Length: 242
Image (tube, rainbow, N blue to C red; front, top):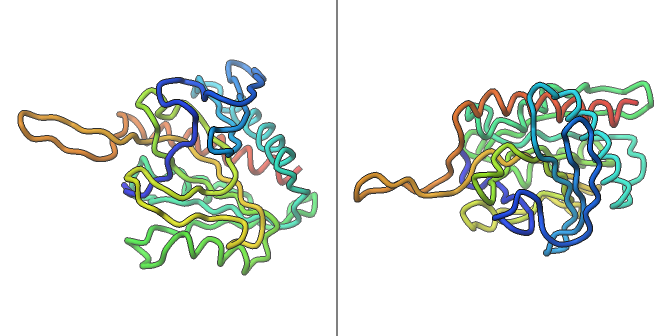
């Protein structure tokens, strides 16, 4: 798993829902959406109470919330959208981005929007920094909007796979406190929106006098990530294809 997962951006790690700012709830078959402003000024949307039996409802709710978020940050109607699936497809807890990328309906859609999708891989495999590849491709295809999909490092174990976060740009910083470069509007030449799911949490596993510290996840994470990828891809396909 990458040691540079972006850290989930919510107000209080001890809460299931973020603290601070204005919250409005919009329930849809068990999914509650909350939006507001995080303490660092970053807007976010989280969705909780994921039920794999209601993946279609999650996709519909995500599509709606993505639209509301784009309106809130004043992103106009894009004519060209690039979806970048960030992560390592060979590691289940880090495979969300690549799984979403391969599920995106690319090409010119009936509404005239042209959609591109790619997975940049990880520096360990490509030798290239993700934070440089993704903005470069966005400029190459002339994207009006960049949607980056990535796994997140949860702030607490209770949030693992319990939220889908929509935020502005891929923020600098990581699960290990390193200053990973940001994927932002200045570099990409267009607005950047990140969709992420917390799939791992940093902690320490004790065993006798020895212990291991790192990123940990839950059993069955692979199946859960696939279900989230299906819902996120369906939401993106609907949002930019209708």
